[in-house]
Image (tube, rainbow, N blue to C red; front, side, top):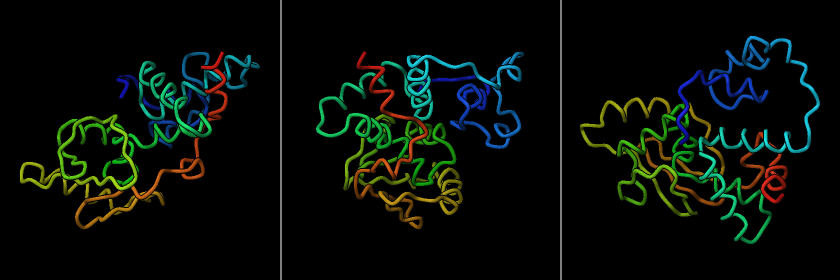
Amino acid sequence: MARRTGPKTKVSRRYGVLIEGSARAFENKTYPPGVHGPSRSIRRKLSDYALALAEKQKLRCQYGVLERQFRRYFRQALTKKGVTGEILLQLLETRLDNIVYRMGFSRTLRGARQLVAHGHVFLNSRKIDIASANLRPGDQIGIKGAPSSRSMVQKVLELAHSATVPGWLLVDLGNLTGRMVRLPSKEDINPIVNEQLVVELYSR
């Protein structure tokens, strides 16, 4: 995940849509960040290129990936059969860190990445610390239950009970395990961007 150390809500304010950070903080300050933010709340008309660039940046920030990683996902999407934009969304959505987050095992995507990086996640019964790994239908993940992770697991369990799990995933809250049953559709993902503009940007 791309490292960002500043206030999380600033990213959402910059693009005018909640990407990360506090929803309450975003609602209180919906204008762009900076001393001139309020005066820029009525945004000037952007060029087609600027609009497409903003959509790409929003998608990158949503999944916390670097530009090089994002380009790699786009090139991978080009090699697959289907609608390139929708395949790009699938590749991002099926990252391990995102699935840990979608299953409710972490309150945030950043937290999910930490769970993976610190060895608390198993993929198909094997420990994995690669947050960018893409899952396929049938893959199973679980949260480590060793004594050294007990406090972490208990906290995760409390979070998992309040999560809304998307239909393309199944979760066993009692055992802190989950399974990817199918690839997510565009409707499942409900993207906050126009992915076609992203495709057009990289096709220039």
